[in-house]
Amino acid sequence: VQLQASGGGLVQPGGSLRLSCTSSEGTLSRYDIGWFRQVAGKEREFVAYSRWNGGNTYYADSVKGRFTISRDNAKKTVYLQMSNLSPEDTAIYYCAADSRIILSQIQNARLYDFWGQGTLVTVSS
Image 1 (cartoon, rainbow, N blue to C red):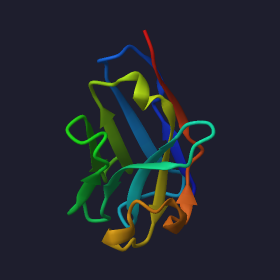
Image 2: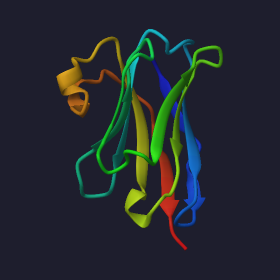
Image 3: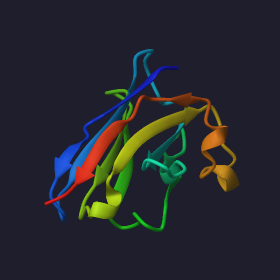
């Protein structure tokens, strides 16, 4: 499945953005979805996860309470709503999919089979 992440941009500290993850091949409802981010020179970092049925969501401690992952199956889209953004959230954000990820391994980027191209989020005044 080919993924597309969109919605990035420049936002001031304390602001909000909503990222979208879509698939050109149709629904994402069969897939576990993860959001990751990466800063140049650093490893890809887990941000958030949504189980294929929407039944489980998990967040990195650094974004808990500020970010929300959600699904709109009718629109075939998975969202990452980000609020109270700080400069430390600046990164390229990627969505990733896999048919099933063991819950204990959802933070392991290597286990996701499908990736989007990434969307840049810059938090700066």
